[in-house]
Image 1 (cartoon, rainbow, N blue to C red):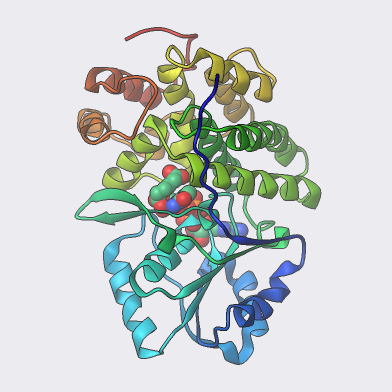
Image 2: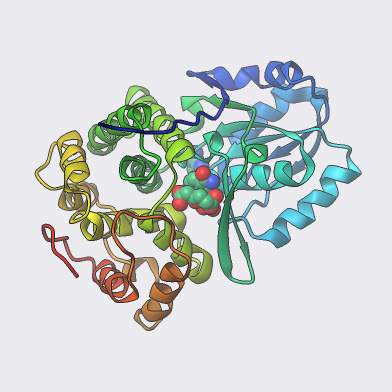
Length: 357
Ligand SMILES: NC(=O)c1ccc[n+]([C@@H]2O[C@H](COP(=O)([O-])OP(=O)(O)OC[C@H]3O[C@@H](n4cnc5c(N)ncnc54)[C@H](O)[C@@H]3O)[C@@H](O)[C@H]2O)c1
Ligand SMILES: O=C(O)CCC(=O)CC(=O)O
C-alpha cells in the first residue's frame, strides 16, 4: 500500500495569450508600488511591453542576469533595491532572470511577479541554485517562491527552436526525476506523466511549425506542470550532475540537461524499472532512456557533452563534484558509476537497456 506526504507551494498563476498586459494589476493586487524590472537583451520587445504596462510603478531596471545565479551579480543588484526603496521585482526572462529575482527576494523579502520566456519552471519552485567560488549550491525555502506568475505564450514565441527544444527537455527532467523521488505522490505522478507526454508531442511539432502558438502554448503548460513537480518532489542524480557541470564548468543549463538526461535515466533504470516503464509509455517508446535520446536526436538537439564545450580532461573532476554531496537518488551514486555515465554523455552514445555497474 502506498504512503506519501504532499506539500503544495501556493503561487498565483495567470495563463493565456496576452496576459502580460495584466502585470500592473498584479503588482497592485500585492499592494506594491515600487518595482525593479529585470529583463535582458534577448527579450527586449517583451520587456518594453511590460515597462509600458507598469508605467509609474517601475522605479528601476536591471538587464544583466547571469546563468547559475552568481552571488556577485546578486550583490550588485541588491544596491539598486535599497537605493530605490524597491518593494517588488518583476522578472521577464528565462530561469536566469527568475533566479536573480528569487535571490533578491530571499535576501530582502520583496514580492515577485514572474513572466517566463522559457520552459525552465523555476517560477513555481521554492528552489534556488547560486554559484560562489565556482561551486553551485542549491537551497529551498518558502521565502524564495514567487507570489505571481504570468504565463503569456506570446512571450515565449521568440525562443529559437534549439532553445525551445533544450528548455523543454529541462522541463521533462523535472517531471521524470519527480516520479522516482522519495517525495513522489499521486498528484505529482499525474502532473509528471502529463508533462512528459505533452513534451514528447510538442518537440516534433516545433520542427513542423515553430511559429504555431497552440503548440507553444501546450509546451508552456507542460513547463508549468513540470515545474510544479520539481517544487513538490525534488531532484536526484540527473539534476545534481547538471548543477555540477553548469556551476563548475560553465556549461549551458538547458543544453546540459538535454545531453545528460538519457544517461542519468539509464543509470537509474535498474533501481526503478517500473518508473521507467511509465515514462516510456508516456513517451510512446519501449525504453525511457533511449526514447529521450531519440526524441532529442530526431529534433537535431545536442547529444554529447563534447559538443557543449566540455573537456574530456575535466570528467574525473566532474564525477568527484557530482558525487561529493549527492541529492537523494533511487540508485546508489558511486564515483565510478558516475564517471562511466559522464564518459557516455561526453561521447553522446545512445543508452543501452538496463545494466548494473
Ligand atoms: N530554481 C529552479 O527551480 C530552476 C529550474 C530550472 C532552471 N533554473 C535555473 O535557470 C537558469 C537557466 O534558465 P534557462 O534555461 O531558462 O536559460 P536563461 O534564462 O539563461 O536563457 C537562456 C538564453 O536564452 C535567452 N532567452 C530567454 N528567453 C528567450 C526568448 N523567449 N527568446 C529568445 N531568447 C530568449 C536568454 O536571454 C539567454 O541568453 C539556470 O541558472 C538554472 O539553474 C532554476
Ligand atoms: O536554481 C537552480 O539553479 C537550482 C534548481 C535548478 O536549476 C533546476 C534545474 O536543474 O533545472
